[in-house]
Image (cartoon, rainbow, N blue to C red; front, top):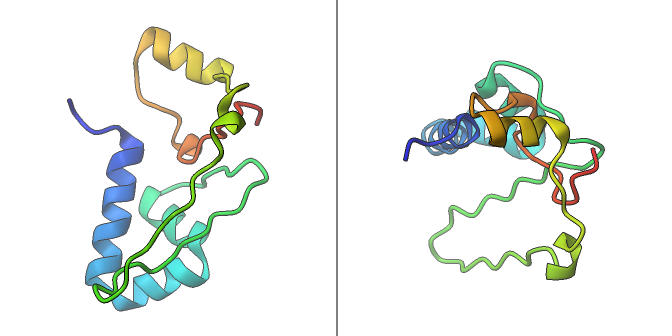
Length: 104
């Protein structure tokens, strides 16, 4: 299966951060701007924040606490997401970080 456009963008963000210390600092300080630079266009967070954590220190173990399962109970796809699932095609690049509750 071929990676989605969103996966390709995130892969490029990670690769750039690993190779370019200046970009990594930009990503940590101004994550939306840094991701948009790689994506080539604006991204929409729908009122949420984009948090970036530098987890590249091999001497540390990181644990990410995910959303509670009940936060996904009322998850629903937007009309655009439904259209994409039903008809295929390229995902909306502005939907790089979809809202798990579907409202936004």
